[in-house]
Amino acid sequence: REAILAQNPESPAPQEIVESLDILTVTYYGFDGRTHRGQMVVNKRVASDVEKFFAAVLAMKSPIEKVIPISNEKYRWDDETSCDDNNSSGYNYRRIFGTDRLSNHAEGLAFDINPVQNMYIGYDKDMNEVFRFPKGAVYDERAIGTLTKDHPLVMLMKSLGWKWGGDWKPESGRIDYQHFEKIL
Image (tube, rainbow, N blue to C red; front, side, top):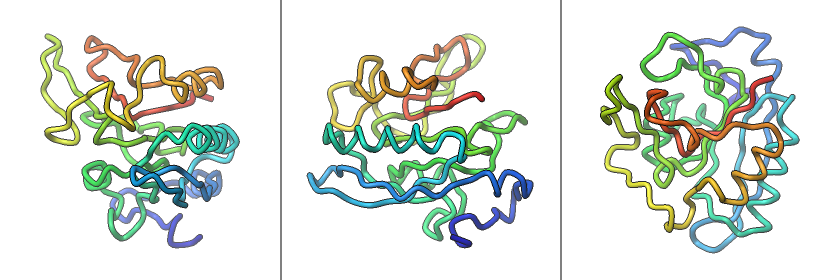
């Protein structure tokens, strides 16, 4: 537990945030057609919603590549490394890319699923794509593990009061197909 909730030395979280977190052990269906266990760190106030998400993942056999906390030595709090590895994760005390604002991940109120299939795209004020993360990723609604506006997992989370980043428009500066967040 201590290693999973260890502080990011480059961006330590306030103690009250660390104390608000829960480590969920989740079972999910993998791209290899087998079940796996992983850990997702989220705020205690949204833990039951995230557990419902993973129960649906398992029931639907909707594949997820891996679920490893960003604090793991493999990622060392680096969102880019985690996304490049197609890792699904939740809590990460960090800022929203390109801003000074804290991400909802910083309070454990957001999680990302299959970043390679569900990439983040950044846009400038003229709605030109200026950034794609992971680099070279392609959004293909027909590819397994891809979230879409009518995907049952997206519909489930919206019914529980979550926002899906795939609904965002270039005018907002980003589309984030991997991202779910809940504003409390």
